[in-house]
Image (cartoon, rainbow, N blue to C red; front, side, top):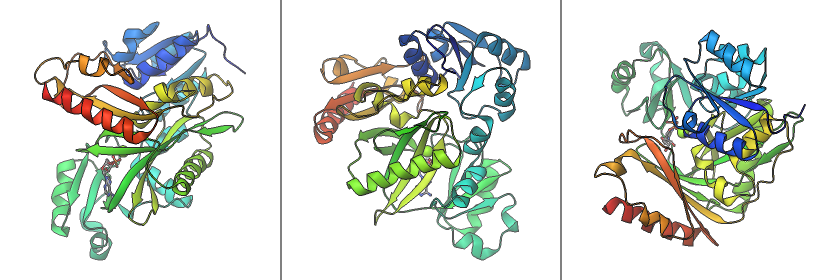
Length: 377
Ligand code: ADP
Ligand code: MG
């Protein structure tokens, strides 16, 4: 059944993704309730209702369910049990099963491999000493990643020699890890997909992503790759959503190897940083699409009307005080987004800006110029 404007929607998580969901939903006339453990959070500041509680607080989940017709998440580490509980009372997308696969690197990798998606060679590490020498050496040099709660390159350690594995495992101090072979990347790309309850599926254009210190720095859209490779990535992303029987918005991150070979890196059961360009550059944004899937509305057209380059604004930009926003504001094709966070810690995502253009090279030049000017202040 369609949920129409006026209804109250819920979102688990009060970060910037929640805030942009709130903005999209409110523009369409919905009210939004945000549940987050922190009293002051970016989404809560613009929401109609806020609940400050842990994600497994049963009484608080009950209050959220009392208020809302349909509930989504912006945070992938929501306990599956909480999503299941809410789904007894309201429509919940994505469902507990999809989220529990996407939030756990072991289940995620096994799901991808078992469904025929190409991934980097990996092994699950629970006891480094349990593994035969050959299993480990064929994965070196590699990256050891915690199975849960890693993000923005956190919870990862390089392992170059077999002797380093035990130390890296101890340093990560997480019982279950994945050792993944270090892949020679030509570039990284991602595709955001939305899938509705009747199986309707629409993907966004392919973003080309540049990371610095494991954190997304720039997304260039459309990605500068051959059309056939872009089509392949879009088809794979849709197939991932279908195989998961996924409802909602999903992002599939890919590695592109030297010979244009495509590997799935990871999946995020929510809108994604690399899809923020869609707010300014596409007919429908990834956040409106999240509202549409949650409310059983037809999916919006995802066509991109302008080339776009998105640049993240991380906490270190604030080291000499508030950045000079004039640098962005005076560019007539740039769109500034700030998330209302007050504590500018290094590496923290404080906002982003998107430069629009008629072609990506022009937008990229402009974006890099703005970025340099911001850093100079
Ligand atoms: P996160 O959850 O932190 O985004 P990822 O697994 O996506 O974790 O890793 C973050 C980044 O680290 C990737 O976007 C990529 O740049 C680099 N990286 C991760 N795994 C590999 C790998 N196997 N080979 C080469 N680079 C990698
Ligand atoms: Mg990633």
